Image (cartoon, rainbow, N blue to C red; front, top):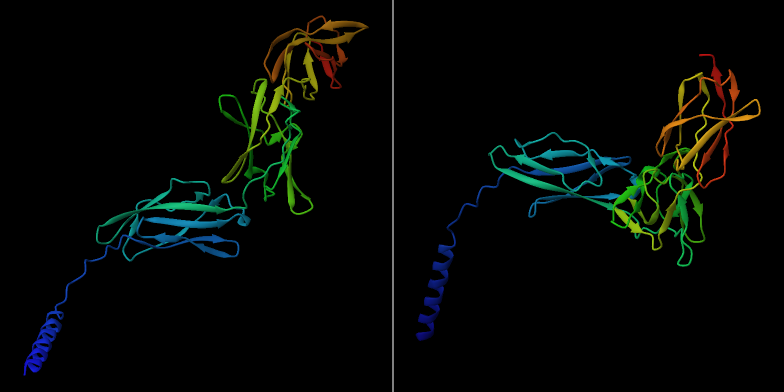
Length: 321
């Protein structure tokens, strides 16, 4: 009898419990201020961004072989939602882009864009100096070559900096007196080596010891051994001067800079005649032709203190005043 009563009580309790579970509760209404798709068109289709609603991020994993400078995304929103700004191309190194969405229900949400470049790392660049010998580069010199595992033939993606004692970066030049920088591929024993040539030392830098820093998109490396910058024999660009007696003309350097310009002379009837230098900077000099110089064509000799005389092969044609 007791066992039947116990069974009856347990059954009654179970039925009451089931009955109480039939009550339902409405879930909170979800906002529709959402980005539901983020795609980046590429040459062979598109890359889908990974949307994380928890931390409101959109992560795009971008393989290096697409060689993109910018992405031009396509964004799909929830029904009735709007973006606060126009969708514009984004630099692949950008880390500040956000998208604010306003839903039809007037709710808002802001997503942060995260672009992860999938590059081969680490970035390795062959040393130019050694522990026992520091290479000297001329200020303004423009035939410097660096090599490494750059994995790109686009020279604009390989950025080379000289870093001074105060840690200031100065980017090296890619369009120089010899022509634009170029990248070639050399086959080594186990991997490709990319060689970048015709890079120039900025004409604005001062002599001293500098660290070499290389950046290829999101990768950065510093060479272990520094280089020394010095003044070297200045370059005077080829010009063909036609001027009258008493006129002025200019000469310039697109390479090694002017340093301690002492004199410019021409030979007139066996005699050296000085052409006064009115002013000069590292890259430009203004010169005067004396009114007494006879009409004719001359080839100048240019002297910078501490360097051999430069016998120029470009003409100065003097016409009558």
